[in-house]
Length: 447
Image (cartoon, rainbow, N blue to C red; front, side):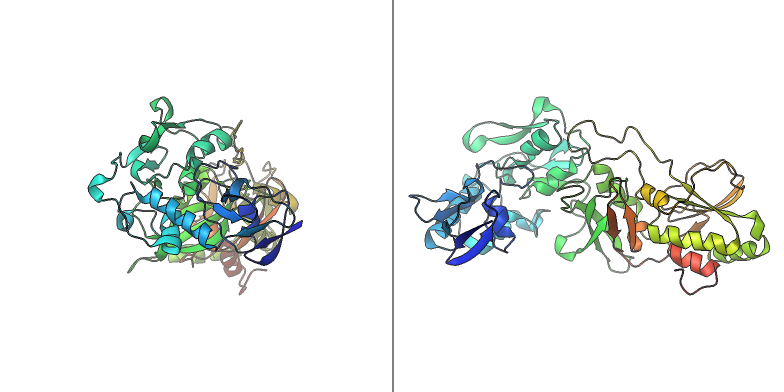
């Protein structure tokens, strides 16, 4: 760690770090487009130019080495003049469509204009360079050439992260543009991250476009339940008028130890299967409770690796109270769901808590399991060689509907043995597995 001076104030920063990232830790923002922590330095947007004492001209913060005692001026007249000039250059051919742009509310260009510029354009609308709009780049990525600031983040993502090389730069000067390589559309399991890392409205999601304005959304931190990796997520939700609460999208949340800055598309779009489902039969749970009391010896209990450790623990107590055998099921392996290159975030076991079963010593040997089984599962119905199973799931085809993994708090243990906590996103309309178990046991709460 070394000491540097920023606008006459001293800060401790990592000498080997990047100036933009290090000052961000202290709540100091240096505006930028092309730099991204996962993509490294590009240096082409010049938006991060700042005044460095002792240098003849402004320097780009993303590629300026940190040294002990260096002094920089972020709020000086020179720095602000340079930033305002760069913003004017970016806006020369930028369309006037903030009200209809799906990126409005989370667009860096819009934010920087409001913070550093607010100037009038000296270029008429008729004189702006016109480019293609709403191009389908594939994999739910929609491109708008006119909005692009050519930061090249998307191109570098396909080169550095996914290693699929679908995007490149074509043309020269003001006619430069992002284009598909050999006209082949984007086809990789991480394409949604291209939308996330685009700092403006040039790359938008065909899945999310025009569904909801971002300032209406409530954001909750959660953990992806799509596989055993347990990637960190932001879950954006809202309650439309006269309707139940809805999840509108999943976004990647930075977690250095698990998924870094990105998530896979399977996890990203899995929100579609996690909406609120109301119980279809109020008597089903009561009937099961009566049947349990009348036939204690005929039942076994099966929990899958989709449950949280809290739900598994409640099931252990439940099975013991009725003298039933407890089994676990974790055969959700999909060999095609495993990356051989690129980010390698997808783990072939497509449930979140396989290691939780092992940690709680729940047997997965189903050799002696009975035909009458109560199955607790947070996913789609799966095939079991049983005559009379009762499925308790957050799906319409379930015998008894429960709340999904995104509608209750819970811990899971990922493929690397890291304990992960996922917070409830919405208040469920169906009871959680723990509440169902408590009801079957005539307890107020299963602990």
